[in-house]
Length: 191
Image (cartoon, rainbow, N blue to C red; front, side, top):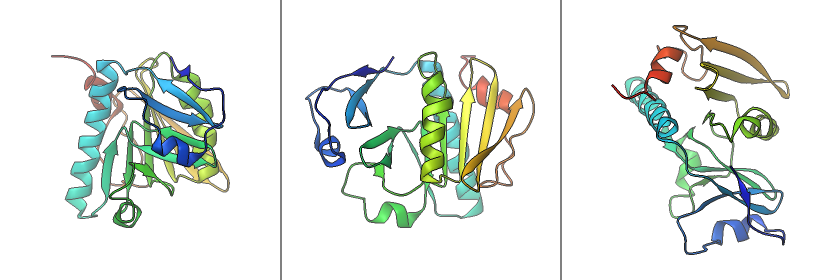
């Protein structure tokens, strides 16, 4: 569950500089710091698996892109979200190497893993903010509903394709990727 922590509006610069001395992670939503609850181990295992698969595909294709987990993306003047996984180009990272890990331009791909407390945030708020930012591709991995929704930006909105079971995801960013929903969701289970 997200917990609001401030009453006074924060600027983006305030957010980047904020340190309350704790290990808490925050998103900036309309100038308000919102503390994020720690994810479940299932959530983390799935996000790590997706990151590893994308890293392997990036290396296989020699793209030189970077895949990051739990990094931020600025989605507005007073908004910044934490993604579970995203992909950036070297140009997007080069000017930010010594700054907070918050993308200032749209990632090539953003991935969110749904948790019980993030359903509305992932399906509604982040979808709207990512579309406004024109993130070309957004995956919503939903272990609660056993599906993955792939959203592709098209003329101001997202076109949606929903995959389940042993269906392979269709990704314009990674057109040769061979990855099924079952494989992604199985990553969240212990042997």
